[in-house]
Image 1 (cartoon, rainbow, N blue to C red):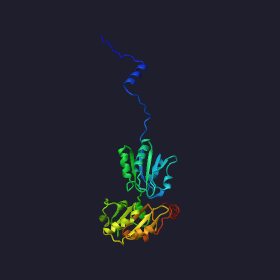
Image 2: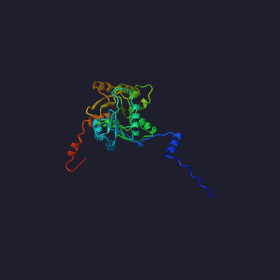
Image 3: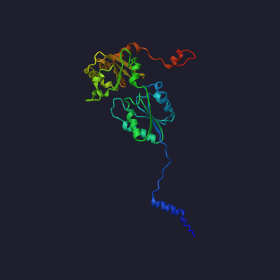
Image 4: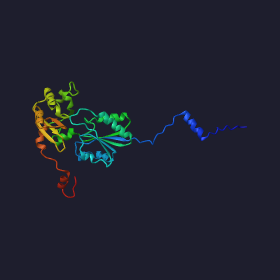
Length: 294
């Protein structure tokens, strides 16, 4: 005869008692889907120089984190109700807020939000975007990098200076101006002195040192140079002088950051190409004639 051994019956009280005696009870709220961070290049300033992709992401973002090189007309593209957070540093301050920015991006993404980190120019060109991307990766945060128009190219262009030219320049180097005061630095000044066109960012307070280093390594003191202040901003200003005089001329003109230094024969074209100021888009479309659009 088979004997059926049925499990003993427990009351609801017994089950709760056993559970409490064998493990801790914990309560977790509803799982929050992880958000995503977009490192977006804001370009040189005006909203119409922002990429289409960048504008689209701004309209979708829950949070926008921006620095001081972003114009308000770009921020105006953000959707109503978005959280707008300024994380720039004062002009002339060398204190870094990078760790604070990194932690903020991770925290907002962990709250399940779509975050746009809006950076002037291009995120991966002297903008610490690489560091932010690394931090997001290390903390398991999904991210995407959206390129922007860098001032390294936009600033010379705004002054009518092509950084390459078939008859004048076959190569261009973009470098930080901060290292001019460092001994030793990572820049090879001897190699830089031989490059056709040089573009220095973050250089206003080191123009004299940059010029001195280049000339000390063989660059002709009469090489034309230009300093472009605030390209595509209302207070844009351009000064041009020989390399051995550019620091003096910039000081007399009270050039302020942000500014871009261009060194090379292509600067001579500023006189010819820098005179034409861009017409507003509405005027260009009107000039194209009825039925045409640009």
